[in-house]
Image 1 (cartoon, helix red, strand yellow):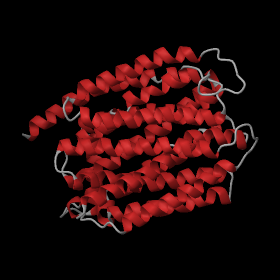
Image 2: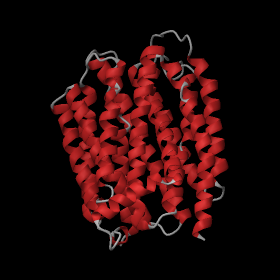
Image 3: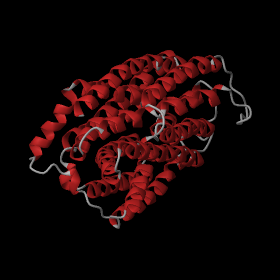
Image 4: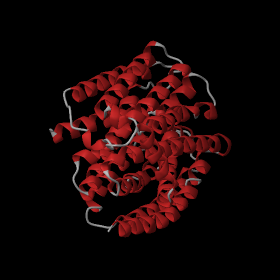
Length: 412
């Protein structure tokens, strides 16, 4: 089994989905401008993406080891290839909703498969945590490239421009390349199947995981962390455009600072957490995020429109606020790795199913709540409200640490 080729195929597959999944914020800005939509109407795109992720993960996570992780990833990529091709060929808000529906269904197949495969190609909890952070770092690098790609195709100041849709031709090519790489990279998945269990037993095992105290505290941590990430990430381009008064292309490019901070934070976390206990690291990160929110948002008040604005004349908040990604970055992969490393490999797909479900629910909730507050009370107020779930994670992590320590002691 060629481990490096397997890892490369995981990186490329995850990279492509990073661009598609995190284009919601950019696409929200474009559909508001092009299809004359209200903020709350556009916010449903997050639900079209995340609810299918939750539903498909719930129904199929325990089945995928039997179907095959490689085949699941190839199927997911094939579905989004068709969806990407439909965007420039049949441009409409309905097609956009169907694109994110297809992306959600496909990502459910892909994420369960990718996370479960990580357990097959790593040999220790430290190696698992390191590879997980690198994988999520690659994901955020894909997000960063996505913002650059979309901003390249956007035309500033052109009413109802359709040139931004040409980016989907490029994305379709990338998904086809990912399919080809997976096709030539077979790998042994036998350890992921719980021998002696029926499909119904596997499904019940997944449900049992979440009713334990460790399971539901973990689910709360995942839900809140993604709620914050998607609430900010999905609405940051619109915040840059409507609150900071940046042109559309610069609004999207400025959001890449958020993605770049995330990527850097996750790559750095892979090195730091190999040497330092996860709990003080995550607490320090959460406090740093709160500090940045409190410091940067007052800088976004009372900004007046400027002609010919550039990076040199952009408000300071456009640079400072997105740096919260640097400190939010380690939370999600760290808590996922801690739980997965504690389970036998045949339960990784079941736990990953729960991870994907609560991630999807958190993403939808975050985008809808942020969109509603944004439309009624303004962007600054919407982002100030992120302090509430940040405090929630801080409290939940305290109990999560106690429960994981107890589970480790019982296992000895």
